[in-house]
Image (cartoon, rainbow, N blue to C red):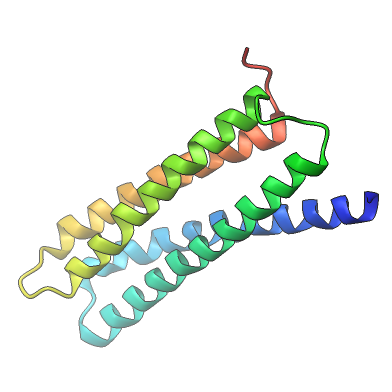
Length: 146
């Protein structure tokens, strides 16, 4: 049981890294979007879409392994840091689904203001990073909030 629990922790940590890490790479790419022309724009947008897709799939592994860790571990669902982590994860899930894809689709529209869309995408990436880093903080520090 101890080995299985450690493997699940490893999967959980790996999925957290996969869902947060690639977004840091996107920050310099978003700065290039307003001046990018056809082929470069398509390549940048494809990379952005791939990172969002990776984050979604890594999020599924993170949630699944997190559920297993709570079931097999010493904590309950009423533990403050678990409750807060779950709340932030749901917020980031809805944020990821409602913000990234629609903004990326607008780049393909004719006459789209790339400057405004890139600025929105930059804010979106930072907001998402803050949400996930907060979630990571709860998982690592495990604060006793109440």
